[in-house]
Length: 64
Image 1 (cartoon, rainbow, N blue to C red):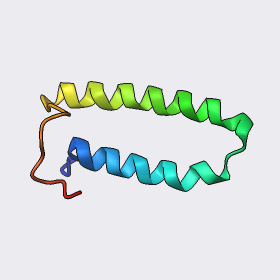
Image 2: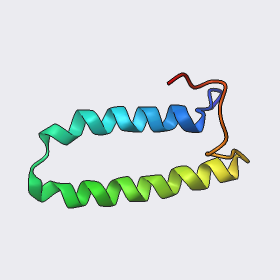
Image 3: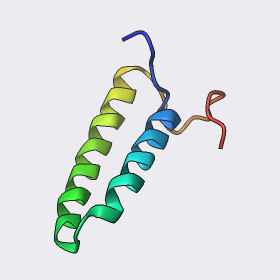
């Protein structure tokens, strides 16, 4: 993969996807979504660590 996402870009995309799906879920589906978000967060953090990226460091690529 030639294009690599920065940590802030990854979070922005995940937030956007969550905002899209969340209103369509029932109350009963929310716990499963929470589990998915937490598992995904763990994978993102591991990938950023593998890349040698400090996810908490300021990025010049992200514009809030």
